[in-house]
Picture 1: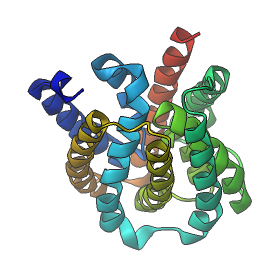
Picture 2: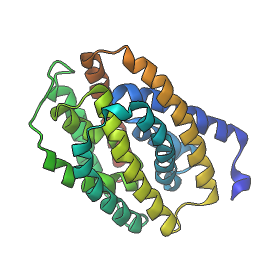
Picture 3: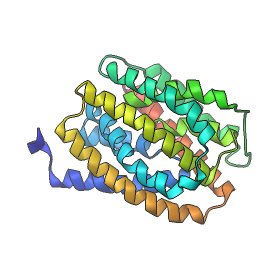
Length: 250
């Protein structure tokens, strides 16, 4: 298994983590989702979700530490318990279930945010209550465990709850960290993570940690409106990526 890994692939995985998470930090997420088609090509579709979820988990402590003062804890308590349950359930069915039509729906929702927010001119597009994060946590964790990254889907809900910039990054990071623990525990328990995938995931996580640090410096220089535009742009791009991925798998 390990003899199939070459040095160039390892370097590419590491660099992709730096680039994706630099962009992810200044745009409220989406780094993992944007990596999915690239990793499908690089290492194969069956390996992508465990690798990107492991890499994301490894990178999150640094992001939590960087933005720890901005965490919105009441959202955390609504989101995380149901998300961890959903992640473990999804790991159980990882190799047996296809959720293409749900992915298409999610992709169209992400693309529609361009019109919902008039590309950043509107601060909010619909009302969000705290309890919304309970079903969101369960649903998003299931889809993300299968596909490898669904962070951008939550951005409209954070923005519409009045959570932006550092607070959005911080809250998503701590939520995603505990979700990631459940995902990796599930992958490990059901024998999905091999030594090869651990190597790729660790390298991706180390690169992503560097990307977090670079992204923080860039985020300081952005206004709330600029941040919102970046978030919307990445949501639309992520939606197009997910739509393409879903349609090609039909």
